[in-house]
Length: 196
Image 1 (cartoon, rainbow, N blue to C red):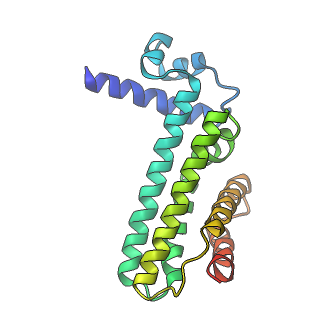
Image 2 (tube, helix red, strand yellow):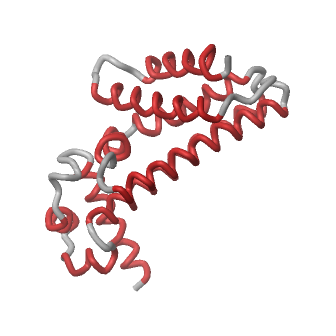
Image 3 (tube, rainbow, N blue to C red):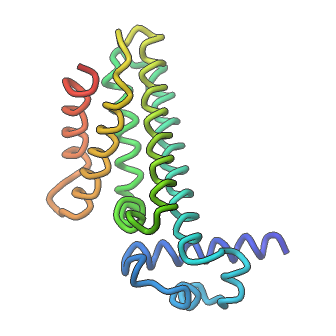
């Protein structure tokens, strides 16, 4: 029974990625998600309170997976890096490549999730705060290893996060931009920007 419910929930989430990430959140009804998942609306409401709950679930799963990819990449880099730029470069590359692997996830997290509701905006702000804390933790680890003399102002990380998000969306929208273009811009924002 538990496995069946888990499978059903996964089917709804996969359908949300397919539809929210292509047609858009506003254009996708609960019935459309149910048709795509080949499940009933009764089954939907056994798993999710409403369509926004489904979007938030997909958003959180994606943000968690991206965070894991970044943390793992940074931890590996910290073991051998001779300069802090290499550590941040590893983390940014992991982030950009994670979202670059599926443009639908970029659209969901950075376009469709914006302005859904006041509650969702508060949730997105909390997630950005967590990203800022992760960047600050990387700075602290770099300082401990002598790769960084001073930790940046936390507000600079807020600006950096907004810039990363904007550039990733632009990369997905343009066939001419690559991961390397995004990394080039992020490196410039880091140094001399955030890191001085």
